[in-house]
Length: 329
View 1 (cartoon, one colour):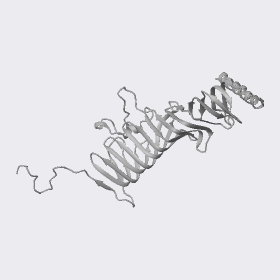
View 2: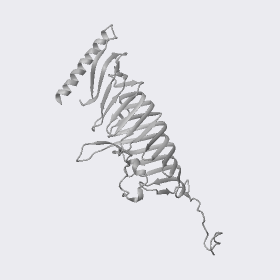
View 3: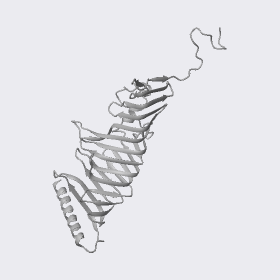
View 4: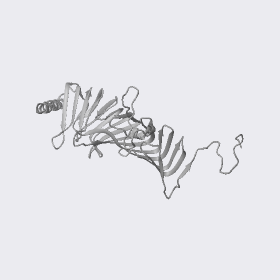
């Protein structure tokens, strides 16, 4: 381990020396091959490492990297590897950008998009990566059974406290996938990640789909005393503006939606409406959807009175009324 760190430090020192020579070299089109640049934080821990097949100068403190691989480390074992065909890096400021597709792999998720940028330090945390085009992220369903818990329980064969994780025909677990016009992710200071999606947002998995204009997805760490820190479990989803939640046999609408990944309970707020094929339509200011069931609980507020509209029942006779025509007397 020590030798690897020494190797990284030595290669970084050599490359920074080469950058210093570039500044005084009239032939600024020279390139350096097989590059490896480390950057350490104030406490001496590795914060990020850039590897590239070739690096060319692209301006003051900026360098164009061919086939770069950027590894970021944000503490609590949060390591991501980002790959693309090329990008422009400011090694002094800890920033980068590019037009081609960037793929970011972390434990429990895979994000990608085009027209991207990265910055080591952000207001929300560390290692902010944003995609201005074709942004998407998939979460491992093994670690993220949230959407499975929203699906209907088959014949109550599984206890309500145990979320159902469905499998595909091939036996593999389904992933929860989200995409939007703009997407960014950042490692939070207190652990985990926050994904922000804006414009044409859609997230789906296990026959559950949510669409809206803006969404936050929090992917938090789960620290077990007997195992190492794991990531990938969706702990919370906040959806805003023209929210629609679709499930088999049910469609929900609201101004806002909050999903608790721990309890599996969904809260619809603001002109909330639940349309169910079995029991009709419910409206209210706040409606709770329970995990693993078709139950919906309407909370009374001062603004809107709860209302339930039952579906039409065929051949229904009032008590003591006349029997339907054609029936035996």
